[in-house]
Length: 284
Image (cartoon, rainbow, N blue to C red; front, side, top):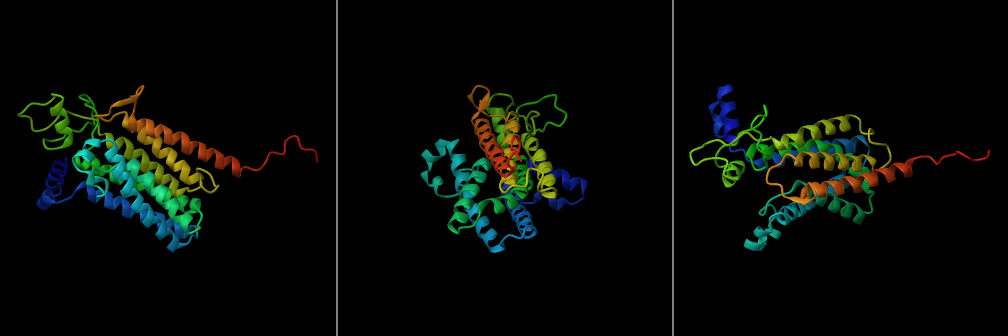
């Protein structure tokens, strides 16, 4: 997919060098991480939090993202562990899961702040909207490389066709929907965009209006987590190669539903704890 996009840019911008740029999906992940840190530190400064403590929390979150992101990816591909057990230790060698990355980042950041006896919620609230903006950048890397792709959609006006050599084309070849002489696959849903665009919009709105999800500590972070899990779960419905786990839900959709319920309950409890006690029925 990236070869097609680069060739198109090279032709329309009259810059032949663009066609051979060595851009990989990992560059999108690095850009997303840089953007998340930049936006998070900007909010940390705006909210008067300790900058050194924020950097410590971000470093711990980065380690957790690499660690659990790799493990969750391997959980969906256990054959990689059997072939090479070192993938459990060598980060990213066995793949990468965004859901696992965010869970690992949260767990390690919470542990690091607890170790330093610092409050979790103020830092989590400052970092959360930036993550919603950065996550779509990483997801665009999947669209760029053709490693995450949607179901076949022959009549969809905005469908994408992936070239031979991509994971999407190999999937079509595996199920017998392309021939030996075809260079480009069938039209497919641009699944990563279905997640990226709503997340980007939500992140921009919440960065501009940080108290939209509530003013109590933790409401912004838990609300962002609910939004992410809900949007990711909805987008997964258009993904190819998804195996049903419970009813009409895939394993990842079930995980997202669990996240919506847990973080939704957390948001509701934080809201109730912040609400003033009712005076109804009290005698003055």
